[in-house]
Length: 451
Image 1 (tube, rainbow, N blue to C red):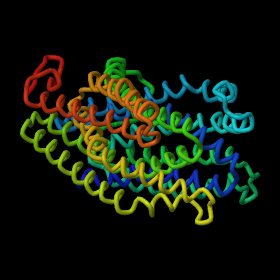
Image 2 (cartoon, one colour):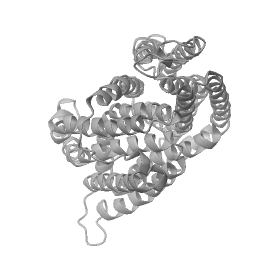
Image 3 (spheres, rainbow, N blue to C red):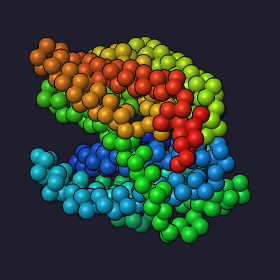
Image 4 (cartoon, rainbow, N blue to C red):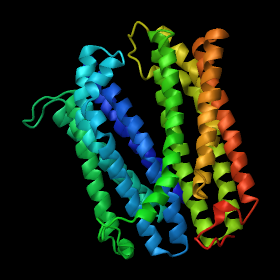
């Protein structure tokens, strides 16, 4: 679990580093460009999150097929994952091109909407390569090639810094572009990463037997339907969770700029630590998928137990970090002479203390999702996620914040409630499934053979 998971954790942390470097470098450039870039990145991330459901479907499908030495199924799943990523990106591209009037209709300031629209019109071109990169990462991780996933992502961070320096600030004879330059840099980084990943996946001698790109243009409708059936619910579940945090940010804005600033800082910190759970969850998906492919039920249960134990250990460690170093971490986001520091830092620290409470729940729901994806169970988990986050978490946060008078703390306690319900329900579903071998999630072929 650790051998597979740690490189994936590093990859997710590096992926998060792309966002951090964009934020920092646009902040150096100017406030309006920072606001436009942050707004555009939020919109892009929403579409990216939904589309990455296909990559998360490819991971267990490839792991299961590879475990039973089915090279054809490995190729079919990965190839149609790439197809679906491209088709989805083309489908939503018009939204990116016409983003400015949409942002204006949503009440954003005119200057920010104009610049944010220009940012999205450019960065939308990078959605297809970004999603294809996610599919290739899932494909390689499922085949045990996690080191290359890590190092290519780390390299992308440095490439992003270089391109930002060139296009945001206008260096090496290039015109100064601000937020538009950050968008250009993002597209170039995605193309760079895609090129490296494709070259590795197609030409590495150990992987050539899968013939990933041979006759790539030929459709495989059965495999496409299978990947879509698994990936669409995953994308919706991920969007439900992301949407819950976005909705909490909107409600935080009702409580004032200082509360929203404290929320944004605390959320940035928790998102960074959540990357650890994401990497471990991916590793759990692969391990469980492999055991399923081998028809190894004891191995599947052992992998699941190890995954849960490690996830809990990470959650407990993170709780301690939040409680002990909360003030240091929140304070690092603000200038020492910021006049609002005395208000924002204590608010942010308090929110991190609440975040410490939901670490077990947050890690638990992420791990449960990974385990369920490993047995290719995604439809009911999607419903559980939507109900937990939107019918329980958001209403609970609203009631605690505005009716009980707990304000920002109440909103975060609502997140605790939603994540806890999801974690318990999803874990129960997984363990009940693996206690009943021969059930629908363990059928491996049309003939219905199972273990």
